[in-house]
Length: 398
Image (cartoon, rainbow, N blue to C red; front, side):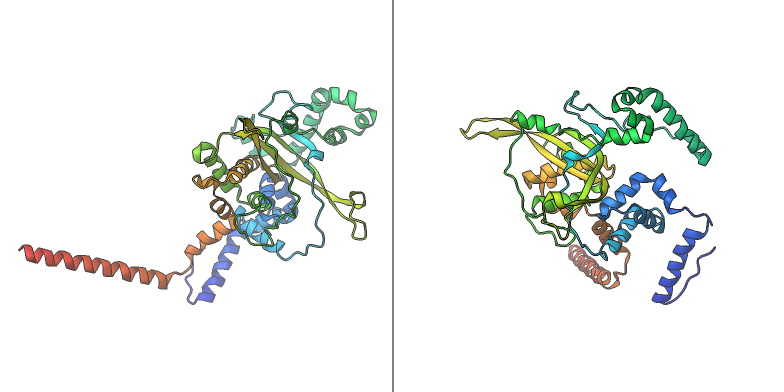
């Protein structure tokens, strides 16, 4: 199909939208929403996190409409989110009660509850699997059966013996749920018990909702964490990397990274507001990271020493790299030394939002005829003036 030139602004825009639709339908092959969710779970998590809306099906729909563009999908989902009412605010989620399916520590080899590798690409060879080109429903079914057999024979052998006959009779999936239901203690608590973590006064102030109120500086920590959590994944990761490379405090150690599901509870509208009156409305997968930074300390007697500060990160789904980078930037912004760009909260928080960044850069494609003509006129006048001076000086020399 050739491009057909049209006249007139509105008509040109309409034809452009038709071409965009043509790009989507010309292959005559469609992908259903369920397939997008199944094939791209990490991308769906990223879109939901940057949109501040947990809605896997809508995120998949937005990704389909955006033809695979994550930033466009986030734009669509945020726009939809802005139309929703907010009848309830949940109770504070307690990460300590997370049903963990992945939990590792880079600080300690042996931790109570053990290291739980879970599902991760950390140990893969990063080689393209060309067999996936031939994958179909039957091969997926066979792969599921094979993995279940292997788990039943190897990894779950001892677990079945200790989990009880009820779990054993329910099968692998029920066993995984039972194993994940046991909350694991926080690694950082052992350092806190030894007095090695810097203690801070508890802050129970109502958190700022950055989706409803504009950022003001200095920003409270609640606003900083929210902005980082909904920031563009690549931007947060890049600034976290920059902080570690020398534009921030130091190289951190991951005390604990855990992934699992947390319960979301709301108070009964007619209840007393006590926790006992609340009821669970669902669960949500999250990744939480606590990183350790070595800092100088001073006790009440004025004696100096060393201790650890925590950096915190939590994101929807399996955004592990983003959660680690978020914990780095959290610690950077707590320090607030503006000699480092990663510790300047205005620099960091204004430049991690993907919608703001995409929108501002994309607006450069729009007509700037008047402003450019002004710049062009200024440049021409400067050139003419410089030329006139040069010619006159040449005449005098001659």
